[in-house]
Image 1: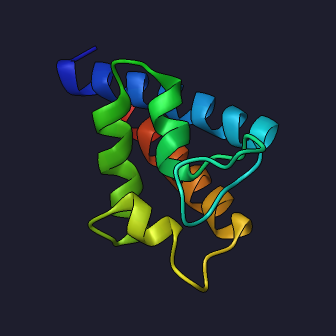
Image 2: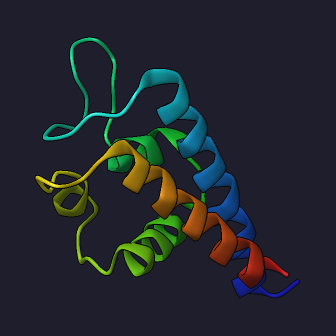
Length: 99
């Protein structure tokens, strides 16, 4: 396993944890988190709190085509289904990079 493979494996762990946080807490838009506990995609990645955070962010940005997760997350047309699709895309890419 190379350093790049290891970063990708760590990113995959971070992405999976972020996905779990969003499923458990619910998705938020326009803020990092709400008073009832919902969180945005960026906050979910932060809460995953692992060494793969930066690589996970890089991969998510590649999947969104955006330069900012918060801007992408908060776009007027954005839905939770979009967020789930991006996380699925990011997990596939991380998995491929880790192999």
